[in-house]
Length: 280
Image 1 (spheres, rainbow, N blue to C red):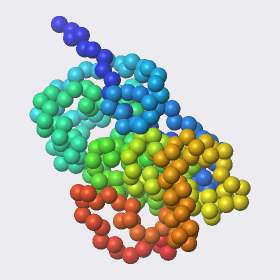
Image 2: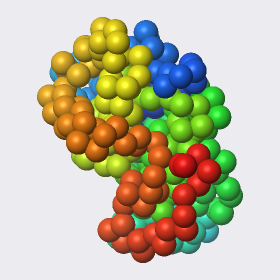
Image 3: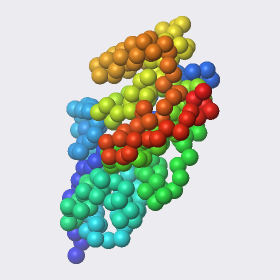
Image 4: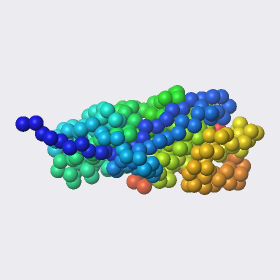
C-alpha cells in the first residue's frame, strides 16, 4: 500500500555566487551586486528572515535507517539531487553526521536534505570524504562552488576540509591579484552568519582594495556601499580591517601564513614550512 508521506521543509545552505579575475586587484565582477535573497526555512543557517512564506518543497521519501546501512544518501538543491557516501567514512570525516547517524535510529528526510546547498559543492564534499583531491578554483563559477563547499565544511564540522578550502581560495586570489566583490561578502555574511576565517579573509581583501586598489582613487562602488550599509556586522568588520591594514602598513591578506586563516579547535595546529612562491 502506498505511503502518504507528508511534505517536509529541509536544512538550507544557499548556493554561492561565482568569481573571476579582472586584472590588477580586480573585484570579481565589479558592477555586479548579485544580491542574495534567502528564504526563511526550517534549520536554516541563514541569519536573514525575509518574512516571506517559503515555497513548499517536493515530497521527500523518508530514508531507511541509514546508519545501519553501508551507504548514506544526502540530497542537495531544490530538486533534491542525490549524493551517496559510504556511511563509515562519512561518520569518520564529519562529527555532524557522526552524531546524527549514531543517535537517530531512522534519520528524517530533513536531516539529510539541504535544499539551498550548492549541488556541485555537495558532490565536492562527497569526493573529499572519499579521499579524492580538490584542485581549487580556476574560474568564475568554480570559485562559487568552493565558497559553497566552505559553508558546507562549517556546517558539517569538518575543520580539515575548511582549512584546505581556504588555502585554495587564498592561492587563487593571490595568483589572480583579485579581491572579493560585494556579493561575495553578502553571501558569506548571510549563509555563514557566525565569524569564520573565510568571511574575515574576504572582508580583508575588500578593505585592501579600498586602501590600495582601484577604490583608493574612485572611492567605494555603489554596490559596496549598498552591501556594507545593509549589514551592521559587515560594516563593523570592514572598518576593523581598514584599521588593521593601516596599522600593519598594508599587509596583503592574500599573502603570508596559511595557519593564520585556519580553524584549529579539533585539528592540530600547522607546522609552517616556509612561504610559498606567491607569498614572497
